[in-house]
Length: 280
Ligand SMILES: Nc1ncnc2c1ncn2[C@@H]1O[C@H](COP(=O)(O)OP(=O)(O)OP(=O)(O)O)[C@@H](O)[C@H]1O
Image 1 (cartoon, protein in one colour):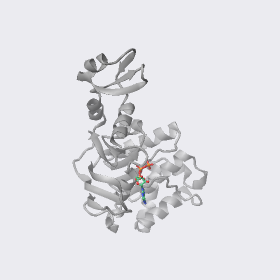
Image 2: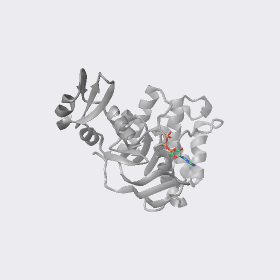
Image 3: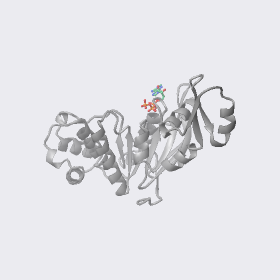
Image 4: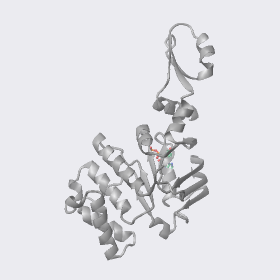
């Protein structure tokens, strides 16, 4: 990994979050290092947003520990060091691009000069300078997301948390956001992002945590692929059922089937759905 400096930015240890009696996060342990993109991958309702909200201090854990940038997420000085893009967040439409960035910089506690300097710098880096006087409501969806990323970056955070950064974007805008996040990683930023897109996790993440209330599996995209490639998909045409069978059990398994069947290696997506469904 090119820019991995082995500095731990985030450490989540045996975290539990309950909403009354409902367990949304069960004993979750994970970490994010400097220069690393970590994806929390899971279906709707898996507890991804709940988890990241605790990481950026919007929710308190029921049990367990979170250490972020050397402190606790709810401390003001720590919050100011993080960059956060919450789910479904949009920039303020009645302000220009530049003003959105400036006001958020001031809210994050930057003095006037530093705020102005950072805003110019971010607009330059994110290729927003030529649109700085454009009213935000007139931007395309992709550019609004780009601006949101800028707003999360304006305080020069070392850890960025993105809750579903590309949901609702068209393929081109999605690719733009991916490239932007990869360039931030090259600058040494650490990122924790949630997604239910497998291709997004595969494309961006150094490590993936499959989450469905608890962590089901963790590893680099290739480790996860390797781990699951031991399974074959067996489609029994006489019953219409699909089975996932380990490589060394295939021979015995198909010997018991009557009639037509097909054996093939499933895609990562199929494996993912299988693992998620088995767990729930
Ligand atoms: N404030 C709340 N009170 C009670 N239950 C909640 C609350 N917030 C979330 N939940 C429940 O906790 C579970 C996890 O929700 P969460 O939003 O964290 O999942 P998610 O993985 O982010 O889902 P999505 O991909 O749809 O955003 C869901 O079943 C949700 O209904």
